[in-house]
Image (cartoon, rainbow, N blue to C red):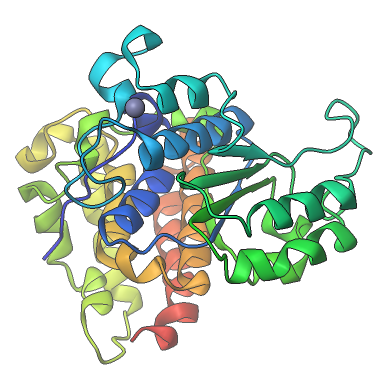
Length: 336
Ligand SMILES: [Zn+2]
């Protein structure tokens, strides 16, 4: 069964960053938020938006029980962008002024790319987080690359990231995982963000909630998608990958030929979202699987670029699925 993912975030960010929003929403629903998320990709504005919204979701006074599955929408979803009617937490967080629920660890001079995060600030933060707090503290690091979040500063926070004493969550931003110290990446869950140009062709905001619908169920019956549901490792064959490629080609070139795909969303995005909906809950706990999803997202983005240039569509699609298959083969052994 393909289970629907309910987005806890605003339609705006859900539309721009469906993969990231789905991963975190799933973690919220299952009550299994990681201690630290590493937001990778070049879209800095979206990372900030995600961090602020998550802080609101976790601290909104108008939800019944915080981040539990019974929680209601946070203030932005109830009242829109006008903060006049927000609860105190949402109002202060959205203005980046809530010093207790939204803590920022910034380089000494944020405008200077060579500026580092001061070790004393990192130590102060580690100490601050040992104190109890009525808030679910979100710690935001706008640049977690190791030349900014350098080893001594990182070391002073390792223990807190691994085993926080109180409710807190680290959101670390970096252009790519490779730029971050291994001691940090090994303690955080990667959440890949899509780039700006690619996000313009993304799915409708509400289709995240409706991904359990018939069009996706139909795709999910294909042999290519059976692997993640089986306990035994299922080896996907090249033929199965090319079968999905042909179906996608038909859906893209003759949209009317498949009445199940009659909405405006990009069939490629829907396929990637389907993969997420199948293995998303496993990826919450497994960095290798979320790394796999990040790789898949990269593949789909470069495919889109190629398709926009009108390079041989069919062979581009076939190549994409063969590369996807290779990615899958690397992670198939780590499935439960
Ligand atoms: Zn609120």
